[in-house]
Image 1 (tube, rainbow, N blue to C red):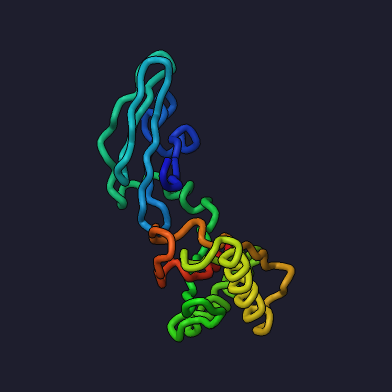
Image 2 (spheres, rainbow, N blue to C red; image 1 turned 180 degrees about the horizontal axis):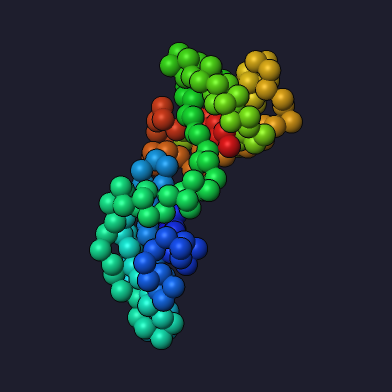
Length: 200
């Protein structure tokens, strides 16, 4: 599965779906960033693969193969699964802060995002903030790991200076691993020089 997916089972929503007592319905939803993975609905009788947003499959009974169902529109998904969607945990808000080359200096555009991050932390009353540092592939791996850690600590310190409790912030360093844009070694890629801030 390349991307996270959300799965809704009508078994959970039996009161809201006609005939749901005798069948299960699986619907594939896109992730927060709009990407869509894939999921297999399978039993001993067969398999159906869902790879499009709104794709659906039904299973009438354990001894019957899953069948592709008519894709569901966003409006129908919202209407049918209203209560399940309302109960779904709020999705994290993710911010990408970019850095100048070989430094712990944010770009001007990224510096301007700090107030929005603080606003998200306040709105959510967040108790779980992840700060993850990255670099591009210029330089050796050990140096890049240290640099990405310094970048993450820099962002943590900016948030703490603005009143965020340091105990709520976890700091991780990925160095040149997990790039946004895969490149060969020694290629400068500005989008890989970043810190990801995940506010839950």
